[in-house]
Amino acid sequence: MNQTDEKVIGVVGGAGPFAGLDLLGKILQETLAETDQEHLTVISLSQPNQLPDRTAFLLGQTAENPAYAIFNQLQQLERAGAAIAAIPCNTAHAPPIFDVVMAQLQAAGSQIKFLHMIAETAQHIRQQYPRLRRIGVLSTTGTYRAQIYPDLLEPKGLTTLVPDKQLQTEVIHPAIYHPHYGIKALGRHAQRAREGLLQGVENLRQQGAEAVILGCTEIPLAIPETRLDELIVIDPAVILARALIREANPLKLKP
Image 1: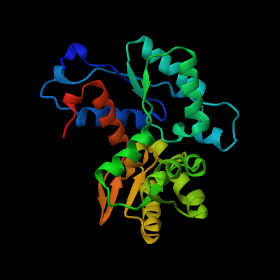
Image 2 (image 1 turned 180 degrees about the horizontal axis):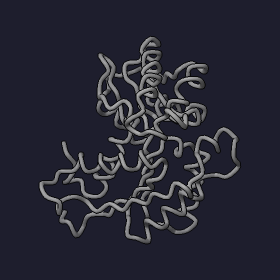
Image 3 (image 1 turned 180 degrees about the vertical axis):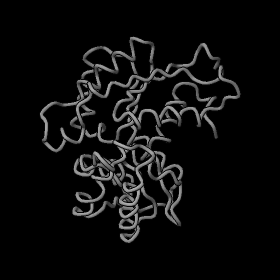
Image 4 (image 1 turned 90 degrees about the horizontal axis):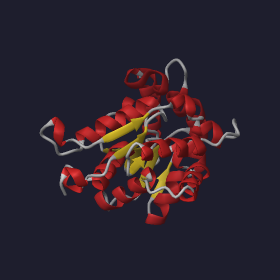
């Protein structure tokens, strides 16, 4: 495949903005390229003020389904030339959101290929870690309640573990969303959030987790490690970046 045959990547980058920026960096890191010119073409659209909060919708705190805003932004990306696209937001893959996006794309006759980050992650785990059986998940409360990961991992023979409800509500979710110390507010500098998330990791370890999925795309900003002692740490954003490269030009995907 030469560069003229490569597909243009589109990123819905405002859900949230730090996660969108992080995905762009991971696409660069996972691409085989020795010069600027050898990198892939990526169009990122970050319009966070146009994207209603995904967790707030799933928890019934707002009636506005973010699916329609995601669909509109995918249309903008397609008009700009994107042939494949993704949204680096785990919660956006809950069926009440993602399925509506897919229905809107189909009804509009869209040709853009919209990747499913959670499905890519489930496939990656089965291929790369075939011996794993007990997988912990740290996430927003929206993803937690929507059962996105259990619904895709458990049919593959994997047991999904999550923090207990109190820890999820009082520690994990605030580590992501708190306006003063959460990752969404502070990005990589959220030290207090990291401490709370590591409490979640320890809780999952005590439950018998062999690996932990960082199931909110901001969490890797606070937990960049690929291992925490014996626990494997799985970053769906890296998996998504590699899937986008695979679809754009598989020859440029790092081994």
